[in-house]
Length: 181
Length: 196
Image (cartoon, rainbow over all chains, first blue to last red; front, side, top):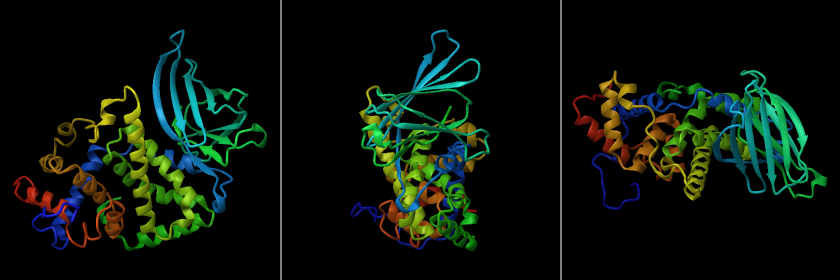
């Protein structure tokens, strides 16, 4: 049945009954209790997919994957916390260093590889319930470097848009999962 | 999402309407589907042995991928199956990347999910849960993955999700299937567990 010839389990071909339903209900409760999804997971998903200008007939989304999330340690004066996150897609790698200033603002130092002057958008939530969010836009320099400073902590998502003059052949925009700043 | 809701006859129709509206361009209609299916996808990712941050990321990536494929999905059953398959694929890729990373965390190399908080502490109140957990851990890894996922799925989706997991149709509902038969035998032999 599960691909192991000869290894039969008594009763495996019997019809599914109430005892089976009871076992599955218990397993459901067990895993919901011992390993529930993070409380904000649904909210993070909603935020990540609440993209604007989505053309469903030729949807231009390339998904980046979180490759790495390293806690770099405290900054020079010990008043800052820094971590680095890398997103990887077929066409582009985005690396961001996130610095939390003691004053509460967040700074993002990013690099695109291959380096190109592409338009970079940072979507953030202004409130926990606001899934549409608010956007900041900047353009990376020739070395692929970009900066967002003074960002309010919360959920954020990075989008990189194809730019005709950038010289990089980006077929569609690159979208990251949301990250918590 | 509880097994009780699983028998809700309106649920399938409601999901179908949400899917149609989303395909018509009203992406906000996905919110209800996201709410209903995100916990299932979490358990799919965790059953593949991802640690919590990676699992949360894989679930988001899967939903983003869905946006690209929305027009290919014909029904809520097909949607559930597609999401389960896509989540497993993403989880597999993430596991493969973690293995290649120098100095990767040992739990990422392990095919077993990290145990998380102390089970005894969490389920200490229920001897029933403790014995269930004990027997469940004795199952082969493939059975643990299958049963964990199927237990999170609505009953009408068993067949299509079973197929998505690479199980022959009927490996879980309408017949019991080997994995559930194994667990059932262990539980019925244990006086601290009884069906309710």
